[in-house]
Image 1 (tube, rainbow, N blue to C red):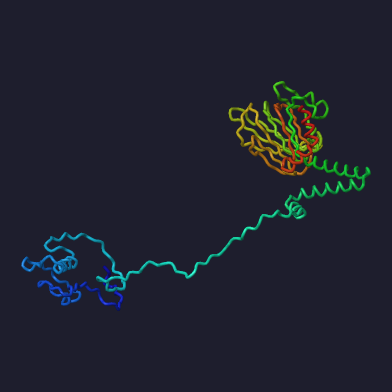
Image 2: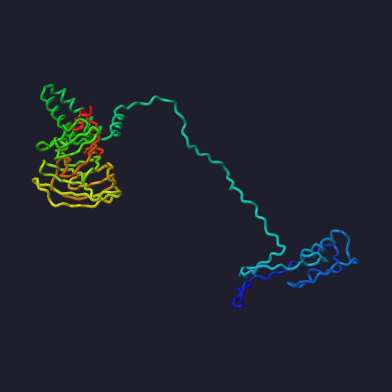
Amino acid sequence: MASAAHTPLAFDSPPLRKPALTPVTGRPAPKEAPPAAQAPAGKMLPAKPLGAASAPGFGASALLPALASLFRYGQVPGTPLSEPKPAQRVAARDRRCSPIAFGASPFAPPSLLHRRNALNIVETFEYLRPVEEPVVHWLHNLVHFWDRIPGYVRYATAGAGLMLFLWAAFPGMAVADLLGSRLGRLQETIRSRAAVEIEEDFKTGMRDWRGQGDWSRSWRIEKAGYVRPGKLALFEPSMKMDNYRVEFLVQIERQAVSWAYRAKDEHNYYAAKIRLVRSGPLPLFSLVRYAVVGGEPGPRVEIPIRVMLHDGVPYRVQISANGSDFSTAIEGQLVDFWRDDLFRSGGFGFFADSGERARIYWMKLSQKEDFVGRICAYLFPSALETRSATKSQ
């Protein structure tokens, strides 16, 4: 129910009225029931059961008042009322009232489609013509094909056409020599840009290595498939390289394993080594790097290695030199990264200082491994790549 402070809105419609039944014209109404017209509007009349003496017959005129009494009061006379059931409170709503008692709402027929006087047909097709053989415009098709091919194919086709024209116009040897020299320069340019990947497993000896003095006597090649380095030895195919990546499998037997990179000769190079700090079940290792200028080692930088390594087990080491950037990784985990521009190019090699002993199982040297380098190597392999393939055979 609405609260006392709530003021209902004023409506201009009449109040709700109870339905009033009007007797059928021409038929007598029961004596006990007053006429419906005398009933005051909005007043409830008490129900009076029909007596046996005044009960009408079972005709149409006697059945309507009984039905009216049933519908008016909602209960058959003489039947006990059921107990009221608790109901939820319904809040008052200010809505517009309208008399709807026994009012017949107008029936609205379903909406029909709008009728049209004529049916419009729109033709959206063309009448088929007799099949005719199409006219072939070869020049138009050729231009269209030329526009669709890639640019590098156009340049290659234009160059080939120009060379054929010069060959036909000037059949002398001067044009042939000129074209041969141009092609030779192009081939050398492609070879210099080609990717290089050289593997060294020391099975054919140390013929691709060079050093100073009797360096070869300090190296030992074991039949088990590894070498023990001694004095500094440089890998000769890498001496003219500037940017490269080296990967090798090594095992420390005593103290450390040492290598050189960007070596211009046996007296000028970068040096680095993995040193065994403490042996045992959980050994400790460190990375030491320094520069050697004129045969004299410079200040050393030592970095502890945070990678889990075991003593007496081989592991892979990766060295990368790209411009002035250098990095060292062990088993794929980065250990050190630094920059220096003292040496811009030079080869790679191994050495062992006094008291050091290690095993080198294999080494792989790679250069210019990008997409362009691999394409150039497929067209014109580098001389170093050809040399490596000949050595493996």
